[in-house]
Length: 285
Length: 345
Image (cartoon, rainbow over all chains, first blue to last red; front, side, top):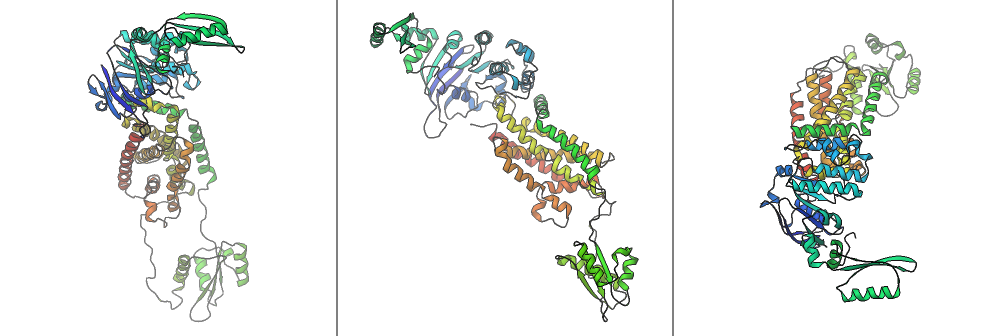
């Protein structure tokens, strides 16, 4: 079990916290989604958890053991996929994986098998400098799996990927969970989180504003909503209205009465809508 | 060991794909060509002396001829002497007259002659004249050889030790910085930090890579220029320790900068300071204490002793190199650990 207790982080040292009083726990074999817009503090929390950032205040415990007491051997059991691909550009994809595998003390997966897994087999011997952003993202993801980690930290693993490849990556993550791995998934993609996470936490301006399973969050905060598309000044505009709210109902009626409505769809609340409702901000912002 | 080998291979491949390696190969070819074909094996660094002996006895002319001086340097009049010195401003004219009991020597030269050189000229002229005149005898000077005599080293081969010290051994200083900045640009250090890798294998792998490259670079430079009959164990040990020392120093400096542009001014300045012992190599009497503290000072003279042995004991060189390599490694470990491996912590 991973426990994060009352985590704070201040980059400036002037009391301007990027992360404020963040607490959660992740059970073994769970996929825990950390949702929030860019700059919400998601990567900061992940970096503290992986030891890349200094723990300033609070606690991070792995199986009851403090992260500050963890020694190098701990890294044999975690895999980290970074948001920004960090690879040796002068090495091929295969070389990147092969040399990285050599750093671990535990048995590692064959690099070619991993490249096959993320559809990079054909580009195995091509220099990474010639890879597209999506290819680099997949290679970074594959690298995180090389030591068969029991804990996976995935920072935006489906960013820059086409829907087919993204689906493949999500399946690999689910496969890892079925093998018993614990996954900490950082993303601003609500669909990814909704599809694969057992639980999610919404992070906004450094604080957790809600945390539960996607279903429970929908039951708790979800409201029937209506998305309306209408013409205004020659442009098609789209707006979302929650039917439980008096002011939204009035606004919707006003649109119907005064504008040329193109489409009108009622829908179940998505995680993004719940996030908007709770924070007033969009996840993709 | 597996970790070290993996990092070693990785660094070797990355470095081999860097454009700078082609520059190194090109420099090697140019150096070999220059040493073999452009620098003559022997050239005269002595000053040219013209003599006119106006004395009745002609003792100085007699002694000069006995010493093997050619006719063209022994002139017949003061006018001829003045013309000769005027035609060759770097030369020194010696006008000798014997107006009384004591001989008189006048020196003609364009420019200034240092007091030391004047004393040397005076001493050199007094000695052969001493039997002819009632000159005071005494131990005005004596020559002491501080090291054993050895066969003279051809001038072109004499250039090899400085080339090894300032081209081959400092390669690690420069290339370690280039490799580090490449890693910073790629952002790979963050990925390395979430592995059990650690600081020591990271430094040792780079040290080993540049020691190996330096060793091959050095041997490829020495063999065509100096020959293959060498004290290989001594040479290999000096090259490896020297390259490792400078690789560690290169990492120490580069760790404080983000890219080659930021590093350039400080890096080049340090390399220039490192080159100052070449002055002592050319003029051994110039060896102030500060210059002897620069690591390249003992290295350059040590390499000359290894390539052109005179019988000097090299133990002190190896003790110095080993101690300097260990100290620079410890310093490098400290800097790399806190600047690179704990960045943001």
